[in-house]
Length: 322
Image (cartoon, rainbow, N blue to C red):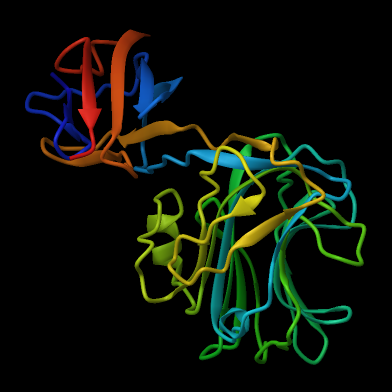
């Protein structure tokens, strides 16, 4: 077979005898059912052959209405950052407009420690430091597709860098340390402003360090280690209901859904989507499955695709969290 699912560790690997042909139909589709205690859901796995390895598995998300939906995280001193990395996955078709806020840590009235926004359809990172400092991409991201945005400020190099889907798209130099203050962190909008984000948001991570370009590229599709000491806040948006957004970093910076009923939970980026390099060799790990509970079971059944390119050892099976 070309691919193995290892039921004890939850990884997909290239098996002995693999022959990956990029010129033919390079897809395999699986249907999977996830069950945990009394709850059960059905979704899909797509395995796609490409020339660069990337990984994902993003669970749920929140869908905001662009009117007044937002998530408020009360101020905590740990959210005031000099060097930082702020990341988020988002999906929007919102028409061109002002700064549609994915996340913002306010420093004071009209100022911010850091923010990620969609500005006239383009990705944008901003911070205030003796005036506004920003970096903005040129390619529109309000295309109704999932994108990852990361903003990085490095106090050692005085650079503010913007990444989209793992690639650097803009940089501003000679940037001093940002302003800090005692106002809240907001997701999707902020109190006192009308520029609210319309669309889906997922996987927000705020780090107290400036991630390198290589770290962004290597990890933007991978769930972070929630126990990483450099994580200030980590919101994986994997709740199914309710009006609280959990911070799984262990720092307990819980968000409160504001002007929202708790019915806005929805699916995140393709729940399981493996993109596999043509250069993958026998034994290479080419996909990850994240399990959160020992009660969870993932069952899969092959429903179609190019079996000459991709093969699972059996046409059905189960992956459980050990």
